[in-house]
Image 1 (cartoon, rainbow, N blue to C red):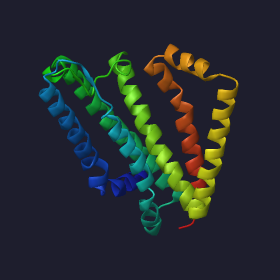
Image 2: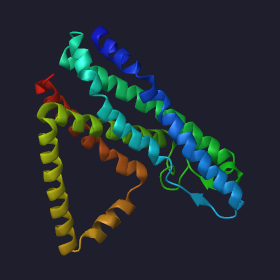
Image 3: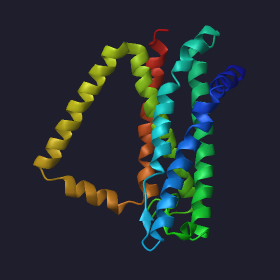
Image 4: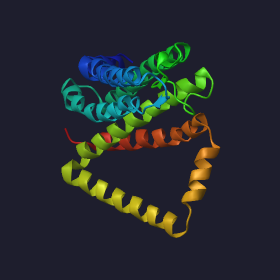
Length: 227
């Protein structure tokens, strides 16, 4: 347990990357949209995807986490402890960010969408469920992006640049093939109806096995990664 906490402390030394930058980018995007709302007078509702910036940043943060791997190993930290400490960091960051986003969503709704009909933190469909459901949606999205980035970095750490390029090449072929099959058999409508039939919370439940897959893959790669 002490080693795991030590790894989490190692991660927290990168305060700018974990805490400052994402909460500089997101408010910057928010204030730009707020200014637009003020200029337009709030006559029409403004729906923006600006909040997605923090989730994209989590992907980048997940990739950047691997920079601490060599440093931790140099301090005689076991790979398993580094992995578990990283999981602890991901959970803590995801939970903390999700709580802040949920609070901002509530404030936005109470304020009458900032008086200019700006829907930035509180969006239809995404925030239709209970507070617990909304928190879980934010949380699992954060975890998904963090572990996706960590899995990508693990591939690079294990197989190098060539391995990563091969991975993306194979992934591109698979996505292209699936897209062709869905188009050929006219299944896109079925997929669309399936998605719209589920709530945002219902769809977020399906992300759990995806996150678990990323976790397993990254751990297996990390066990054999060179330093």
